[in-house]
Length: 587
Image (cartoon, rainbow, N blue to C red; front, side, top):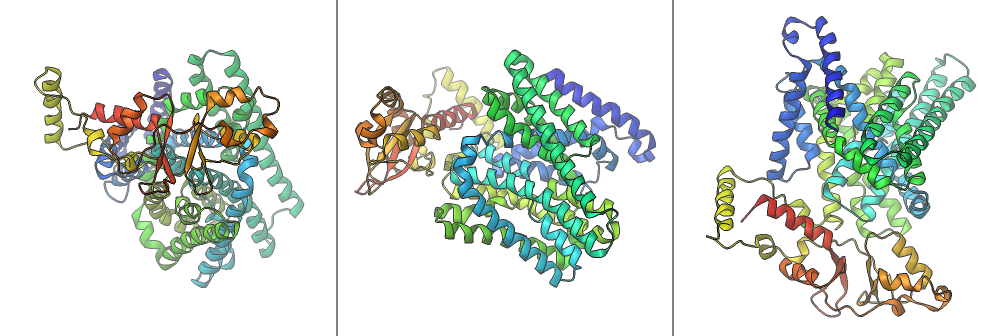
């Protein structure tokens, strides 16, 4: 991995050395390695500060870049952004690769009925509000139509990084990933169609409509074909290669496909979504593949967001004026109201109605790329559109991650404890912890189980839990288990009270009974729960419980009878929290 990273950074340094020959005297003194070092150092410090301030790391990295960019320090030469562009695009490509792996075919079929209506409502509300609103505020019809189309796009890297950082899981989280994918696919296609309509309406079409449509089909079809071939090659290569060679394979294949996409003028975002989709449906080692990408993806993510932050210019936010402010409000209202409206009509859970919209507001790379494409085609008409996008990105990229994180926390899909960071304290507190651990190791002080003493179950539980109905037949139980991450499943009566637990080992025995499909119900497979947790109990009770059971999760029920299911506590969440607290050494 070190060799791979070193090769990437050395390549960037060599390219920067060539580019720096044409710089002004002040820029010539700044080497590309210095720029990269400043960005990484600032991001490191910002990441530590985010632990203390409880901010998403994405926001911290963006602010770190912003402080070094033209709005404040202005110490990053513009030419260096061009040199680092291959690294930032590779980071985006790996994020889109991962995003594609979230959609095995069986899951697509399962969530499409829920996701498509929500996506349709969001897109329609957003396009109409932004197009009509910006037209009323003074944009031309063509410019307003472009802004309405660009408003569809949601930043995939920003949104997915926040979801992975929070370890969130549930309907809001899964629908967010699905809608981000649909948004960007629709944005790319709709942009080309709207641009074609603008040219035809203005009589500026350089060729026939059929030629333009064929060019669009070639672009989208070529991206799909390249992604299909690339995904199959990666799946096959991972089958015949040792895992220690996978990292070089994945980075090399991704860089090659990125270069081919750029050379052939194919939308690389679509290419890597298809790659991930093909890999997850054709490889048996998808989790190992994504784990390999994580080993380099962390560094590339820091580079991506810090570089992206250093390109943000607060002066542009001032330049966009009333139209820019209107775009921010109209796009935000369109996404939130569109999802709320369709979720209400389709009977979606209240958490989805309330929090899915705010999770979708981040906007950056896709919109910027499409705006730049429009400007290159018609600078006079699209120049102001690009200014508005670049100016408002500052707002969406700073507030977007905060809202996404708040959405998964408020919807109960992220344990409260995950929002409490334990890796940063005051210098005096850190010094005290060092000597406390030293004294404890020497036997002079008793070691404290600080976290389990001061935290309650409600801070570590996951509220996004469904459970299996007591009357569910065997096929329904199997369907539930198939899409669950646990191996212990609560069975509920009509009042959502826990009547028992289905454990995977018992369920495994039922698989061999040919009459199970018709005769067995969930209640027949369930065993009475030995112990249940309550939200107000101290975490030490949960720790003690897991010491005496092999279950991977324990139901949490209300304190007052009837004891209805409200959440579960996972062994993995509790273990991770205890390990993190032990490493931090907080007293």
